Image (tube, rainbow, N blue to C red; front, side):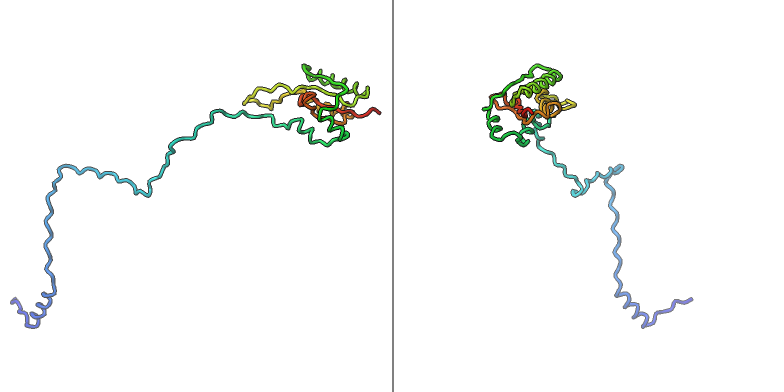
Length: 204
């Protein structure tokens, strides 16, 4: 079969198409590998800076206190403060004279060295006898009591001066309560907080 020749029109069309094409560049030849043996593992990379936690280490810790303050277990109100809040039942002018230490007691009793039972019995007999004799002001000496040792592990509150706290209760209870008109801590000239003024009612 004979090869057909292109016509002038086909030849002109081919030239137009050939002018619009771009010749393809040859690919570069690969470079020879300079490494010998297996490649090392890639080094681990640090996480981004925004994910790094910021830890602030204090330069110095606060110093501990040199001595722990003692624990106070006795939270009860002082007897003198409780008595001072009570209203005055006796003559107010006479009360001021008594609280200034200018009223001399008609009789006195000292409960030092007695047990609770002994002191209760002695106080009861003393007040009953003083009232029967017509005495009005008597002095009851209890003492301030020894200060208890401070114990951080004490399971119960410790209180100084058992008699000092028990005597006001006895004087407000039967059979002495109906006989007592006024009860106060004494002036320092008569013992201060270690004694009580007991002002008795008149005999009927």
